[in-house]
Structure formats: structure tokens, C-alpha cells
Amino acid sequence: MHESKTRRENPKTHRCNWKHKLRQNCLRRVQEERAQLLWKIRSNGRRDSHKKEVVESTFRDIVSDEFEKIKQSALGICHEISNSKNDDSLWEYDSMSSEIQSEDIMIEMERVLYRDLREEKIRRELEFIEEEDEYLAQVVFEHMQINDDQDLKNRIWCPICKRGELKETHNLIYCTGCSLQLDLENDKVDLQFLKARLGEVHVGHLDRGCKATPEFCVETVFDLTALYSPVRPGGRPTISPRRPPNGFPRRMRCPGLRDASLFLS
Image (cartoon, rainbow, N blue to C red; front, side, top):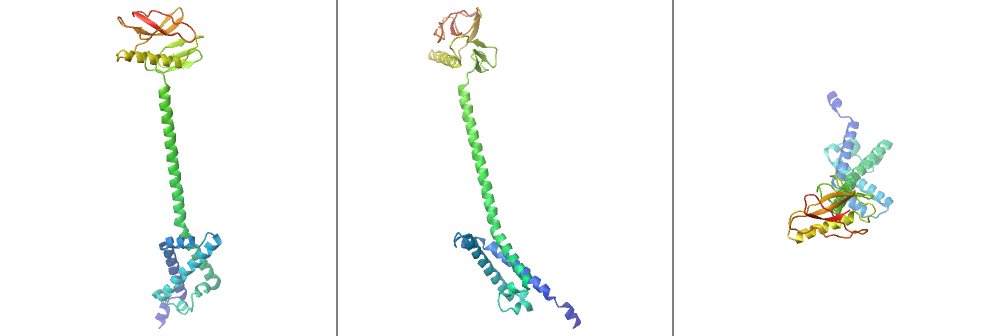
């Protein structure tokens, strides 16, 4: 008899067991039925106060339902629970302590309900940011490619070394890869004029059926430096004399060549 009394479980232990079980079941229900619960909340209007009422009512229904299940289970064979006449005992049990615990369950249920929703929202925002970053990076890359292509088209390669790029500064056109320098002095000639003349030379060269790249040389006479396209023996000048915008064409001789036509001075 004494042993049976000592082995009898403390009612407080039963109380802790069913409350812990109730908490677990309620949270599980919220997780399993989260989609349906969110749809129910959203379909009942947009007012925050109304949504709060729907949430509280829904949570109380879940708690009451799980409370009934516990009462009918083996874990519910406890004097405090089995003798309860209605579900309100859950909220009145142990007075203030029970009310606080019930509110804790409600708060935790709400946290579970909206937790995945917040995580999904954050995930979508991060995905949007990543997509936006990728889009901006692609736009910048394409813009740089376009600029590079345009810059490449606008470049004028040196006709002498064929490696450097022709640049213009003040009254001077120079090559970045060799010692070519053309002093424009007061002539109204610029890099674009030189580009056009070079283009005419190449077109004329191809029109005569020659697939070789035209050759050029620089000659300085009487402190005058000019760019020429040499004429091979038996051939014709690859560049016809042309009047620059501010002056007349002049003819000069390139050493070792039969003839040469003034290109730019």
C-alpha cells in the first residue's frame, strides 16, 4: 500500500505532461495547416483588426480541438482534466499562470504561422536583389562591350608600324607604338582627315586587284615631315595628290623608291 502511494505520480507532473503535449500538437497543426490558415485569414478582409480577430479565433479553435483529443487520450487520464466540464477550464486553470501559458501558446502559434511566410518573403527579396544585380551587371557588361566595339572602330592604327594607335594632341599627330610624328603646324588637317585619306588608299589599292597591305613611309625635307605611300617600279601612285584644306600638295622623293605622292604634311 505504501509502495503504491509512493509510486503514484504527482498531479503536477500530469499537468505538465498534458500542457506540453497540447503545445506540441497545436504547433504541429499550425505547421501542417499553414496554407489553409493563411488563406482563411486573407479571405476575411484586409483590416488588421479583423485579421487579428480571425487569427485568435482560429487559434482558439485549434487549441480547443487538441485539448479534446488529449482529454480522450491515455495522457488525459488525469483528475484535473477528466473532471473538467468544458474547454474554458484550459483558460481558467491555475488562474493567472494558466492564462499566461495559454497566451504563450497563442504567441508561439502565431510565430510559427508567419515564420515561413517571412522567410519566404526574405528569400524572394534576396532573389529579386540577385536578379537585379545580375541584370545590372549584364547591362554594364553590354554597355562596356558596345563602348569597346565603338572605341575599336574609332581607333586609327599606325600605317608605319601597324601596331600602335594614332593620337592627336594640339598640332601633332603621333603613334603610340613607334616614332611617327606629324607636325600639323597651321594646316587645317586633323586625325579624321588622315583616317579618311588612309581609307581611300586602301580602297584604291583593292580596286586595282592588289591584296597586299599598302606600305607607307615618312620623309623629312627642309624641316617638313610628310607621310607617303610609295610607288613601286612600273606602278602608279597609290595616293593621288590631293589639296589639303589649307595648302597645296607637294611632291617629294623617298630614298630607294621610284616615286612617292605627298599624303600629309
